[in-house]
Length: 365
Image 1 (cartoon, one colour):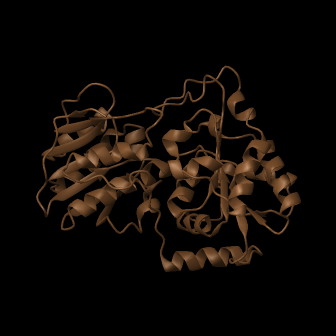
Image 2: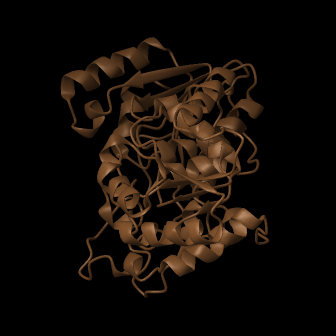
Image 3: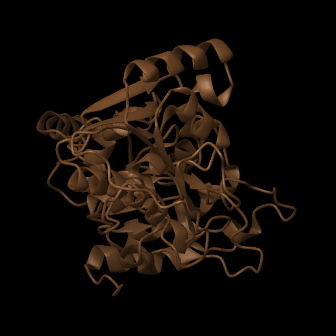
């Protein structure tokens, strides 16, 4: 990765603002870099500026002192009055440095207008006059994406550590998740697989191309039920995923449906308790990785190598089509072949990974 104008170390007691605005999975992918910053500056005051959609993902993160939360629509819809109010909130923070985990020139300019003297950010392509120092985004097939954020943090003088995601929970959240399972007829200590047939939706995008066909999910779970009938099946997702989970539930009667019934913190807890997680390339994928739970996922338009660490890739399946992956850098070009990459990934292809996960025979990284 190219680095433009390498930065220098910050004062030990610096006030640091981190900017990462939307998408739960994207925010979780910044947690290794946040940990690197805290290790480098244990006496600093570290504030994260993020949207309300994803803020709950890091409320228990021990490396943050403060979360500056705002309505995602302010930036997504370019609401001038809201942006000016947000800018004033940031200016009042008198930050010494901004660490911007976006290649967006708008956010780079925002940090400049907020009066932050040192601005370290992610770049896409050429340099940017709004930054003090920048690291060029690496979208290569061999780069696990969170490393991009760590390289931005390194511009402040921080050392790059392991790119292990963090999804922390509190004891009361674990108790709440256990009660939720019990109320649905599932012993919190029994083996269950957590399944999310929806996903691909956040405050900015709804990318249907990321979603494996519901019929494929149903066929996979029917195989699970026939071969491992003692393993419970728990469906999850947001209220917006009800169509996908409903289709699977109708084909797999007896599965427990918690769609729209969990908080984000409870979802973290459920992912940590599950024997395995089956989902699309979505927030739950990154939650499972962060919680250390085996994850089985289909990859068609997006890159397996970019979004799953080497230690977790062996249980997933990816398309062999020449045009896959096509969704790069947040840009989906559309699909003239009706998402064939996902349709071609058979239930049998994912059953191999799920069976290995449940048997505890995980592939070597």
